[in-house]
Amino acid sequence: MSRFSQRGVLITGASRGLGRALFDQLARAGARVVGVARHTEELERGARALRAEGLAAHVLAADVGDLDAIYPLAGASQALVGPVELLVHDASTLGPTPLGPLLDLPCEALLRVLQVNLLGPFRLTRAIVGGMLVRGSGIVASISSDAAVSAYPNWGAYGVSKAALDHLSRSWAAELRGTGVSAISIDPGEMDTDMHRDAMPDADPATLARPGDVARQIIAGLEQLRPEQSGARVSAADWSAP
Image (tube, rainbow, N blue to C red):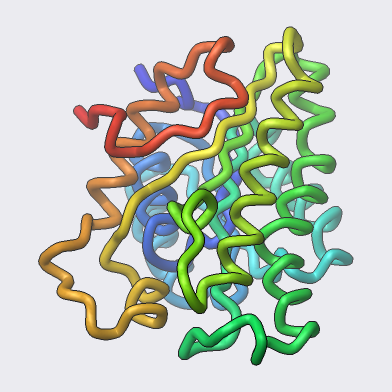
């Protein structure tokens, strides 16, 4: 039986790519899943199909970059699935595309990237983790990027936000150590997603991982996550999918 069977799971950025794959696979593993996205039409169609199979799959429309939306989102999620055992911060934005140099990046554009990729996850974790602490159980998983540890030309805003998100995850882990609540940062690697195409339209899709395969790796790793791993930054490729 899955570690997350009959447990509440909240996934942001669930309408496409890795977030959508995690939403589908965790629902099929028996979790009670809420998928969050700004545009939910396609996600809702998928959720209806899952519900028709008797699975607990729910959808909420929200922009995690809108800080005023976070606490209502947390409340609505828990009203649908109960206490959240797994919180996945997948929602991300690159900033303006085509990607360009920091010298040409408006401050407002950088602020938007930080609001979605860093401040939203910070506030949503604050809203959810209190319940985890009461139960003495829970995982906060942040989806990172190699741009968090390697500086690439024109990727500055995204890279800065993901580096900060990694450190935020380590800071949560340090403060929550011994409580039964874990925080972990996961680098999924390069995937064949809309975001990757927006950033690198000339990339060969054949060289990129499929989101469904990466989702299986991540879920396999989270299933076996140990308390001493809290605070780590891991590569999804290092986790073996069944």
